[in-house]
Image (cartoon, rainbow, N blue to C red; front, side):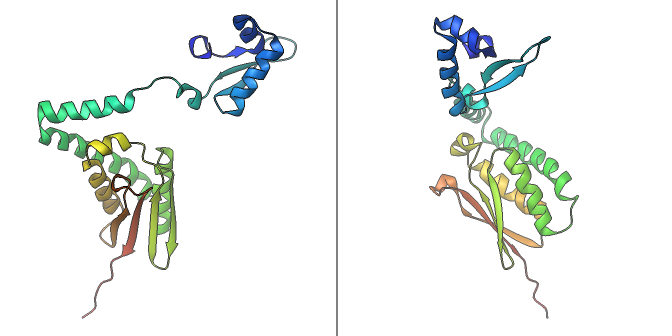
Length: 201
């Protein structure tokens, strides 16, 4: 009902399903506990505001969504119809766009830690659940989730591009290595970042 008609009050739900208003509130409360709906106060004129419930993002996920499969199908079609070079061009174009977007934030700060923090924040906004920690001179940059996992399973070129992007953002003074990798069966992706020591004559 909420998917079809949008935000509704408990009396609206009660009328739709032929139950009591209290029964409707109980059902909405269960959905609220699961994070599938969220309440919004609707103030109209004088009197108490009306509480309406609408689907949350998690609530919308309960309905069929084939965007992941579609992504893989599109990539597969690009490769089969246009060839590997075309697929590589798509991956490269995405890498360039990501680097440009990140660089605007990374170049605005000075220290390595500040740069890593900027990258972490942007990765979190994109769904990577990123975090980092430092031990001595080594920084461990961790991504606990991969929002492009379906595409990565089809084409590891995306992973190579992301590693290269991280290296470019930090510059030649640091070595970036991926020590854990989701497609390899690890539970997360982890980059290890170390300063490159210059040997003196």
